[in-house]
Amino acid sequence: MSYLRNREGKFSASRRKPKKMSLPLLILTDALLVGLILVVFAFFHHVLPAITNELAHREQLQTVTEAPETQPPETAAPETEPVPAVTEETEPPTEETEPPVDDRTEWQIKFAEHFTDEVVVTENSYSSPNVSITIETVTEGEGDDRVVYHVADIYIGSPECFTTYTADNEMRYFGTQDVMEMDEAANAILSISGDFLTYQKSGFLMRNREVYVSDSNANSLCVLFEDGSMETYDGKEYTIEDITARGAVQVWSFGPNLLDENGMVRDSYKVSTAVSYTNPRSAVGYYEPGHYCFVVVDGRQKGYSNGMTIPELAAVFQELGCASAYNLDGGGSAVMVFNHERYSQQSNGGDRSLGDILVIREPAAEQEDGA
Image (cartoon, rainbow, N blue to C red; front, side, top):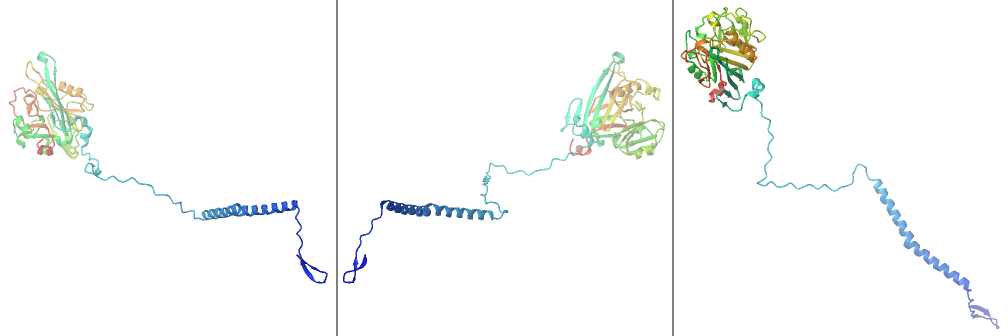
């Protein structure tokens, strides 16, 4: 609309028809308008959410980076297996106990293969935790030259197992007692004739640490010491003080010494004529502390056993491998008793009583318990 001056000089409104836009311009205008709409739509629906997400992601990374390094990430606690309830059939835990103490003696350990946990007795053997005895009967020769002797191989667990017993358990001159009675009274497992202690009035004689005679003479000695060692001495080659100071327990005086310092038969023996003949014999041998042997030779029994001379007896101990050996009272006194029965065969049928015996037995504590 426009205002024009009319003919009268007044202004009046007049309407003009709008000019029509050309077609190309119209198309261009519509395209620009659609493009603008699309740009606005894309900004709000795509660009703006992407920017928002990126900013949130960066903020989360910054938070993780600034967290303290010393704090480990939280993890779930490990699951533990439930403890089963104890039922009546479940055995309660046992308390740990210390291993048993080995209270065996040095000899019991050293000679363990010869001992047994319980007492075992046969016709010719005995074994227990403290004593081991094995007897072998040997027969040699024929006719009038035939000889029978008995060798008892002995292991003991302590020196207390090797002791002596005197007639009626006392020292009186010319005192004698039946060997079976002495064997029983001494609680002996094995016993043999000694040196006829009660008939000797000179020399050096000791039994179970008690000195009966303390007078040096020409007799040889056999000494058993408290450590279990055994040594023999020729007459005048010892002093009573030295032997006593070393801890002597038994001192026998009869002889002779059967072996030399090398365990061999000696070149000669100083004995009386009667002793030098073939006779029944009784002797003790020594290997090492805790290991000994008794030898009893039957004799004066024609057709059964003739007996031995001193060199022949010495040869037996040499063959056995003993370190030393000592001759004891023989003849009609020579006897071996095992398990309270005569094991050897005495020449006089066992009528002779003795003054003393050598004894192998259980320790005193075992005897009190009835062993």
